[in-house]
Length: 442
Ligand SMILES: [Zn+2]
Image (cartoon, rainbow, N blue to C red; front, top):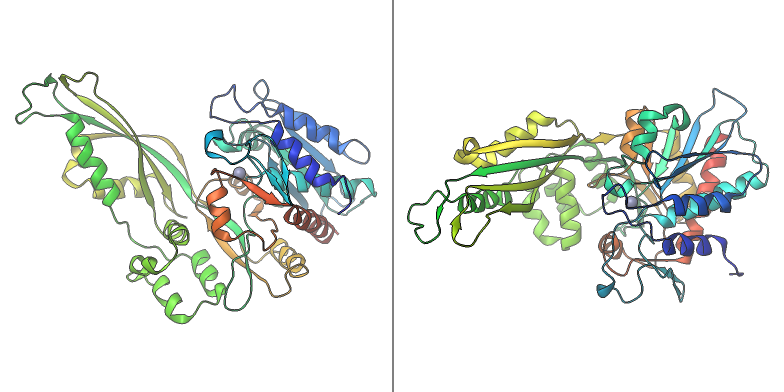
């Protein structure tokens, strides 16, 4: 590898800018990464627009205009923010952007500054050699993905739709090689679960903590509410993406059969590694995770109110009423004793599987992994793809990775400790974007 390696160098700088998004509007300050990328792209043969709906929350849109207005528009989209990191738990500085051996270390190395960097490099390479496609190529570097996208992709799709309207979008987070009996399988993320955030308010009667006999203690009731939600077992839903994924994996039939059955599914999870079992379960079930409790005021006072926050993730086709019904079922006779509020409901979204973009990603991937095939997957977290699906685009999550790190490694590094990526993976993705843009845009 000849120095300096542009994609490695760019990723290191993106990490060092530490655009940490803690959910507050003042955080993120993605203007640093937007300006870094703007300077990196340079000029010549394309337009660049900047959008900053709140101070410092800057996103960048670079566009090579196609010659044929009827030809498709392809967006390569990376987010420029990262989640916080607890440096005490890391073996290296999470914002050092160090190159250790052949790995770049730091927050964002796999979520998703790696792809943001490789997409920028591919865009610059194409533009600088006078790429004149029939379709239009857009590079989009967005703020605020890690806090629901209100200051990034969500803003652009709602307020500036003409700037980002597209036929095809590629963003995070697929492509991590999964071994199978018939060779490597590369998941293309074609959809994602929805998020439904519920607040459960539990009431009680205040009293003196010295006399708890038969007290109506809101905290004690809340404990039972939490227990019921945590032990609730929603029905398994074998949906189309799941079926296509599992059939594509070529696992032995004794593994596949229970994982395609409404009845045997949960028992079959026990035989799988925990990380995989969690993914598979979440992919086929509505999930309920009680994550925050606020209640009580003083050690000698019986509390009269507790507020619980429950993170609920929904499957395709589920609306507010469906979740409400499941929550009531989970709570049983306590359902009428609590107040429910839903501050946010963002439904699941999915794109079709059989598209020219799918075929192009598959062909380009086979040039790297001759034994590979692509399989569809429904990601269990939220990504910016959902905004574009609602505007009518086919949006996938994808990238290419070397065989160096395992699926389990990646699963633990997303928002976890010691996040890192190897240089070969960065090169594989850069080459992929170039090939797919050339292929899809003609
Ligand atoms: Zn991400």
